[in-house]
Length: 265
Image (cartoon, rainbow, N blue to C red; front, side, top):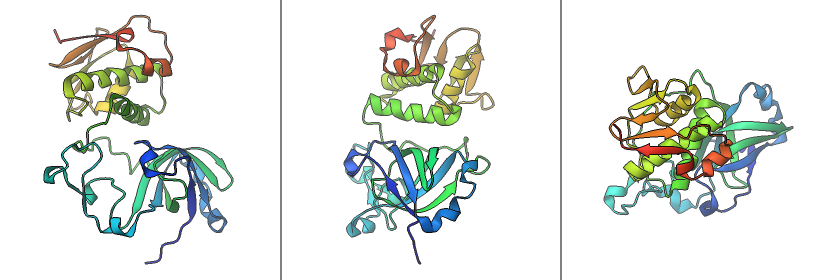
């Protein structure tokens, strides 16, 4: 098999341990010999970026790993590399979907890449909403978030992927689900939610759907007349009336300034 690098990643992160869980703003520079392959790339808001991970040869023989966030370092914590996104694998190919935020000639600026600076790019493919979007997909949690802040970042990405932009109502949905998972699930994903959302807050409902995958058609998301988000049998969240904060302020504000949490009636 012949593998050719078509470009290179430019990233502020140069060490693996410094890479944030969800990556960082970065760019892909396509080599001049492949410039023609970029024709009409502007048709697509998101791209799949394939990178050749810079791994040691010994790591290419690793078939089982303990993923990040798994506390059991024994046999029960092991996962085969085909079931996780570990960089250690027989062929160190990395795959990341990212939004194109701009283009300067042969340089594509991306919102988030989890590739280190200098990573060779072996291919780009468009993210097709008609083929790649599988909202009904399910998967069990692999590793527990390291902190509340890591969980918040993950929820923001999921909600924005669904809604398309971070708004105050989306940020509020993030903080409500974050508090629920912290308080009642030890940061873990319970796997299935049953939620009642305020009928008068459709954007908040979008955020809840994007994060929890609850939907009206499945009967896991319902709408009610009260300005309350209910996680059935677990907790109820009443947003503070007249909340006038930006998305960024909501993401960093104390819980008590955003909502009143209580046990379900």
